[in-house]
Image (tube, rainbow, N blue to C red; front, top):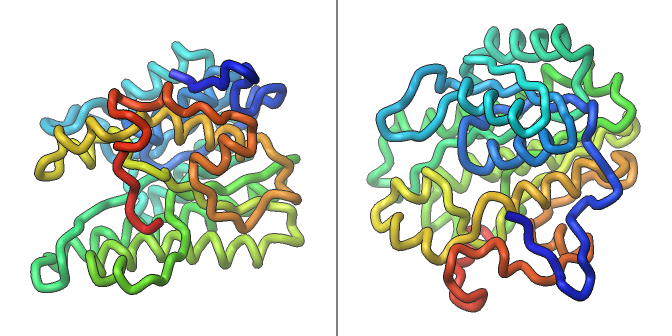
Amino acid sequence: MTARNEAQPRTPGAGATLAGRTILMSGGSRGIGLAIALRAARDGANVALMAKTGEPHPKLEGTVHTAAEQIEAAGGRALPIVGDVRNDDDVRAAVDATVGTFGGIDIVVNNASAIDLSKTPDVDMKRYDLMADINVRGTFMLSKFALDALKGSANPHILTLSPPLNLAPRWAGMHLAYTMAKYGMSLTTLGLAEELKDDGVAVNSLWPATLIDTAAIRNMPGGSRMVRAARSPEIVADAAHAVLVRPARSCTGNFYTDEQVLREEGVTDLTGYSLGAPEDQLVPDIFL
């Protein structure tokens, strides 16, 4: 589902394509990651997915293998990789497998993330470690290990699903452990963009302006009610596509929202992404 402005019938990224380009993504078995992968696949991209879900999960729809099937059905080439972004050997093997299969890496998408919105007295330290390891260390490590391959690309991008670095105290006060983990991802964007600017590697973050219908939201208390005031993952996928086709040297160090990117692309009517609620009743995402 793609929103279009009737007065200006323009698809995000129109005229630019990811055909033949290779993406390595963490996660991606479902939700926003899968939507980004499928959008790229429709261009004819190669997509390597590294995710833990090799076998069906009782509470989560899809595996890395079913995602790969959908990618190929959409017109792309897929490489499903069962691995844990917390494990050094798994990440290095994923990079090597992607280069070995497709000849290089043009794009890294740091999509894997863990969430726990508990306040400090209630958060279990194992959950704290999980968020720190997946969100921060995993993002840093996948980006780091893919750098040599990215530098060989004509238009290299790293895109991380993380929020702007909004230091208003309310966000840390609401859920400190999760805020630190997500901001660690965003600090990786900030630092790598500066570190790699002379190498021509674009490093950006992307965050939804509203709630998105994902398994993480649906599994929260009251999740089925919350998603009625959310948008579909396709809005983030279309925004990601628009960023990833931009010239890397002139597009780096940004903390985009999906709405911002699509409006830059000339898409002003976003109602097609809504799941039923009027635009003025959509729930804003956190950190904005």
